[in-house]
Length: 178
Image (tube, rainbow, N blue to C red):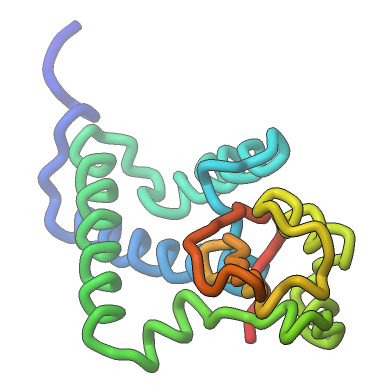
């Protein structure tokens, strides 16, 4: 095997194209995931993992184009890391942008009553909320001060009788765009 042709390419124009393509793909996927909904990565179902793997495979060529060199791959990877860091910094500095990127919590139960309009909007059934309540040791919806679908997919529950206590349930459903 002779030479490093194809392994390391240092063409600035080609690398600039890789950076531009990677940034475009990053934001396209970010917007797509935001619109489609959020899932807590630690609780993915097998089909969720399949989708993520297929998306990564589908966009690989879109990021690096015809340049399959080691350099192009590394530039794409570091571009993804840099853009992700930049977006997280912007999110921390801008409340408005943060809300658009990650959404806002949704009240599912208020003063012992389901908020059916919010359940429909989030695609959550009463039975799924009851499952979350039971996991928090609450047997009846009437015993709940509030239950909130958090932006990370967790359902936080505040029981009526004991005041506020920290409980969380990772809901594997979607948190849709507001």
